[in-house]
Length: 459
Length: 95
Image (cartoon, rainbow over the protein chains, first blue to last red):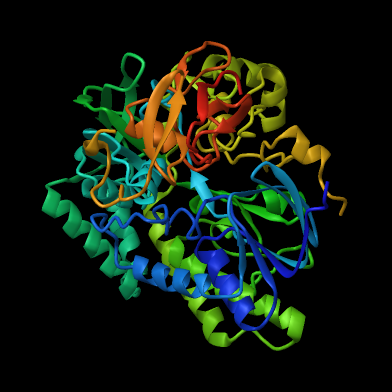
C-alpha cells in the first residue's frame, strides 16, 4: 500500500467563508495550501453550491451571498489544493489525519488554520425523532445544496438568525410555509437593534428577508415555540404555543398545524472538537453558542502553529467568518514570511464581531425551552436514551457530562454528543440555564472506518 | 422521479439509478443518497438502536449519524455519500 501523505505550508480545515478567505490570502502570498473539507464542493454550509451541472436560478439568495460568490471565484482560481469529502479524525500540531473516499491520509503542515464552522443546536421536544423533522440547516442544504423540495407544508421553528434563510429557502422551493415561529420576543430583538444600525450590510440583509416574507404573506411569529410533533412513521402534525419571557409555553395558547416537514433550529453550536483535541483553550460564551475557541486579535489560538477563524471562535455569521479568515491568512503569512497583519483587516474583523454580537443579543438562550421534552422523549438519539433515564443518571451519578454518559450511555454514540451534548446537562439536571462542561473529545474525532485508523500513515 | 420533488433548474444532470431496500430509485448525478431518497419520497432510513423506531435525515451535513444506511456491506452516512449507478442501499440499523 502506498503511503498517502501530503505536505503543505498551511493546512486549513473547512472550506466555508473563513477557510476560503484564509486560503486565498495564503495562496496569493505564495504559500502551498491544502484545504480539507467534508462537503463535496467548496462554500461551506452557508455558501452551499448545487452539484456540478445544476443551475438553480430559482433559488433566492440574500445580498450577502454576492460576497460569497467572490470568495468562491477567487478560491477556485487560486493554487489552493482542495480535498473535498475529507473527514479529519485525528490531529496534533503540524499534522492532520483524514479519511477521503474510504482511504486514510496524513497532511503534514507546519501551520494549521481551523475553520470548521458550526452545526445546528437541537433542543429535544416530543416527536423530534420522527422522520420529516429536521434541523433548520438541513432544510437549507436540501434546497440550496441539492435543489430538492422539502415538502408541501412546512413549519420553521426555533430561535436565531438562521430561521429567516430557512424560510426563504423553503419559499423559493415552492413550499407553503404554514408557520415561522421564533421563541425570542420582539422586544428583545428591538433592544438589539441599535448595535446593528451602524452596519449597513446587515440592515440591507434584514430588509431583504423582510421583503421576501412579506411577498409570500409569511409572518414571523415572535414569542412562539414548537412544543411537539406527531405522525404515523413520519411527521404529520406540529403543535406550537406562545412562550413567556423564559421560553416556557403558556397554557391554553397551543395551535396544531398540518405539516409534512418541520425545520427546527435553536441557533448554532461552534465546532470546537478539533481545536480541543489540539489542546487549544476554550471559553464558555452562551450568547455565541457555548464553548468557543479562544483566539487573540490575530486569530492565534493558545497552541503555537494553530489559528482559528469564524464560527469555531463563537457564532457570528459569514461576514465575521470571512473577515476573521482573512486575518488568520495574513497572520499565517506573517509567521512564515515576516511582516504584519494589515490594520484594515484587523479593524474589519473587529467591527463585524461587534455587530454580530449585538445581533445575537436578540436571541439570548431561553432556559424554559429545555422543559419541552417529556419523560419518554428521546434525548440521545444515537443510544435511544429518554429524558427520564438521563435524569435518573444525573440524580445518581451527578450532573457532569461525563457522569451522565457513564450512567446512561447518552452521548456515547457516533455523533459523539454533538447533537445531545449542547442540551444534555441542562435537561438531565432540570436546569435550563446551566453552562455545559467542555466537551470530552476522543480519537477518532468523527466516526471513521476501522481501516482508516489501522492504516493511518505515521506522523 | 417526480418533478415536483425538484426545484426547477436544479435537475439538469445525468440520471443515476440505484436500489434502496429492493426498490429502484432514480436520482441525479451529484445527489447524496439522503437527498435522492428524500426526493423519491423515502423518509425513514434506519431503525433506532433500542426501540427500533424509524429515523431519517436530521442534520443533512454529516454531524448526527441519524441517516446511516448500508452500502455493499459498509455502513455510511446517507447525507455525505454520493449515489453511484447500480448502488445497492439497505436501511441502516444500530449506529
